[in-house]
Length: 68
Image (cartoon, rainbow, N blue to C red; front, side):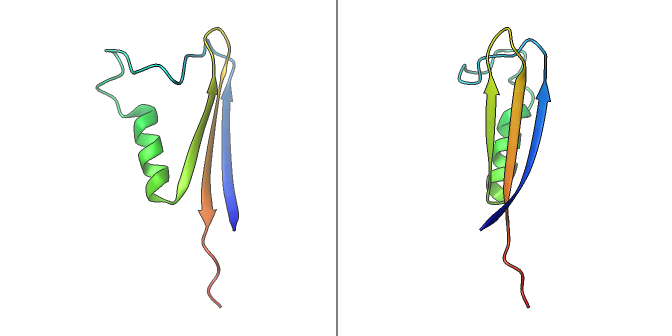
């Protein structure tokens, strides 16, 4: 199977991707919404980040087999 991959990186302040969402993020879909949308498209989301460093978001979606 083949994949389409999109990578977005920044050199911001980063965050702990395993920490529960704080009060200011609970009213936004953010990363939860991204994960849900990719799951619906048979894809996956990877988050690489840590406090004090930038963040990398990797979104992968399977390419359906071509119908000939």
